[in-house]
Length: 222
Image (tube, rainbow, N blue to C red):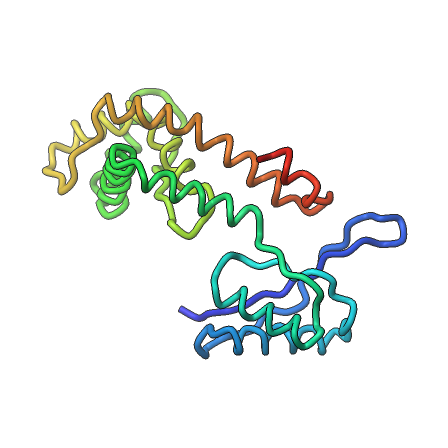
């Protein structure tokens, strides 16, 4: 898998309408140190001749990114550094989930059974037939990706939506599974958890908008 860093620029035109541009996607086979990252950012700035025009640099919360922007500030390539609010919010959600053993255990149980489905052609076909039998639209179980925002909420939502067809698929397949299926209590907790996580999902979506200024909505969202 190759690593890349993408540099975007955000400004306004004479009518104060937002302008969002992708300046560069740079291949980074080297180590992601602060110096290497700041070099890549500086190249993009020099390439587009926007030296002295960059007010703020927004990055995720990685220490290497923070140090890279500090290098840029020292070199007068930008004035201030802000952490991405949406990324910070996701880190808070992750820490909150990890602090609750009962919730962590249930999430792991859903991850495990969904992984079983994804790695079994027999169960995939059984799930399709179960949905056909129940007369519901064909859908797939969605696994979460730990680096993708809101993916745990999306995973739980797909699992709850397919609870009946998943149970029928497991019953019809009559094959031994390496993971125990979630219980009714697990599904009840998942439903309550979805209600909480959807609030953060909505906040993340709003904070990720490109057609309006987002910095002014951070405090109201919090």
